[in-house]
Length: 329
Image (cartoon, rainbow, N blue to C red):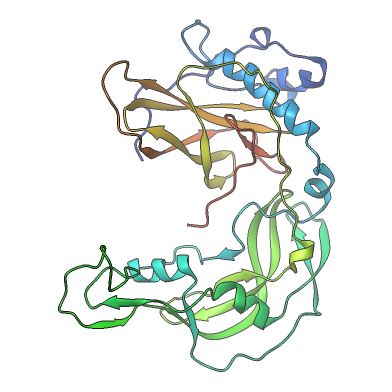
């Protein structure tokens, strides 16, 4: 992973922050159990202090957002409901099939319907009873259609006709699909608004994979959504601020995420803020001041080490204020 060429250091002191009473917990020193952290140099040319001010306002908007009860007490998944086994080595055709929902059954699938009950079990010891969907319903969520025709030797997923049809010997066959050979009820680890949890799931054995693909079995009516944050009209404008697109890993206090940057941006570096109840992530870049740049969005991986694990704290994008999801890939 390419790291920032000039990483910023954590020098932000509480005295630099414009803290309002509800946010004083974020100003605690190292002994206070939380920190208004960021990688904030003290001179005016760096974004640390302005970002901390902006992040406090993003955090305040989160606290005002409706839907907090479901976030704190319900089941709100923070990653996709189809989970590929860790370490699974999928080739290009298999990845294409998974992304498009191209599955097929090698054996007859029992038409079991819903009606079962289960429980989501959280890492802190709590649990939540939930209704479950049946096997057929779970498979229907996986299976989004049959694969289209592909030319032999062509990239899977590219149709045989049209302007994108590759040159080949002219023969046509179906694109690859993932073959389900068995299914059973189990659980799958999932990141949720209440931290890590073991969640009821249907586990589908797929030919060629050493471990099953899981589909969360919680009935749709029991699956909550993250609150939508409405930011105030005026937030500190920070030159070169770029948003966080999503999380790629949460490992203890280490959080890896992706920045969306422009084709002419350079020296991307993470900026972050954490309080007792929220984490805000973003990035800053140096921008070319002259010349034309293609209007392309590039993905830049970065990571930060927090003072504490995210736990139940929402991780928000510092540009939009929305909750960041964990990528399943």
